[in-house]
Image 1: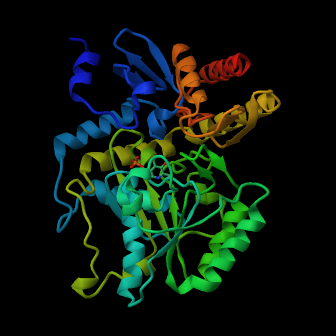
Image 2: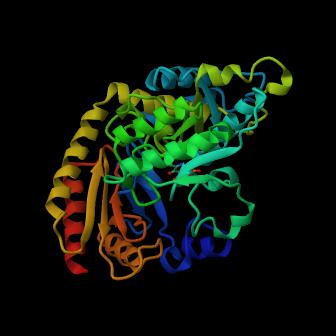
Length: 424
Ligand SMILES: Cc1ncc(COP(=O)(O)O)c(C=O)c1O
């Protein structure tokens, strides 16, 4: 039997509706920005394998550090024990995070990083003897697939079967250009009536990924954060997608002057090699969990702070220190910007936008613009047949490459996008 046949018999893939992804491509190796299948076909990984692979695949420095770690200490329970890699990674992250971030809590992925942040926020109020259970989130947000993360995400096709099981969230519009004032007023009026019931406001800073790379400006986010602070509402930045250089700065929140209380990190955290999540918080939040045993944070996973994952995280952060990663990021950002101005007037383009290394093109379609829009199937096949892995979000195609991508490969992607725009 072929790998595909064996796979089909036993394996259940995520987000893989049969119509589009029914027959998986059997990948045998990956290097830099390329994936290679079993027939030797090469694909440019234009989406960094679900936004994770920031330095490119199979990076020798990360591979070496991981291999050293697994020979020395593979795993140890993280309650009552600690180890060098967990502490070193925490030290390195704290140096990169805004100054108000003081504690690092490890978990397994982006969704658990969000769950942990939400539980910290709810329990923060509980430990202070207050009942605050309301959450404010942006419409169409995506924060993950576990129940808390689904609850604070927008309601739609992903959450429909679970609708009655999710806790209620108050949504505000995303302050995209032109809507800023409306959203500021919306939040102000919401909090003027209910601020003492609201535990937290959670948001994807500057770019809402799964919603279709929807972008908004730092100035308005600053204003929203200020309103939350004035009303003693905790703020949670979900930097799972935007962290580690994606938006042109180390964190998207580095574009801001007001800093959130909690951060959720994953994806690029280990350079796209190991599953790991981090939730960071302020000293004030941490201190609320100190003292009586009943104030403790009773949350943990078997693989919390797994040393191998931590070593990948350390190695990935070292690459930011030792390689010209931010020169690569600046180059991609500049090329994206230029490309946006080249295609913005195409008759098939509704809007083209970029922030840092993220480029998004919203296509004009006669039909609705849902996730299952026919453009999604058309564009996926078009690009894969040209050796480019793209994963369109409905009628929005986007490029979010590993930072090591060459200018030639990026230009090839742009040329192919133009061909696609001219073909529809
Ligand atoms: C902003 C954001 N938060 C959370 C998640 C969930 O992360 P994971 O898929 O690792 O659970 C994602 C995943 O795409 C995301 O984009």
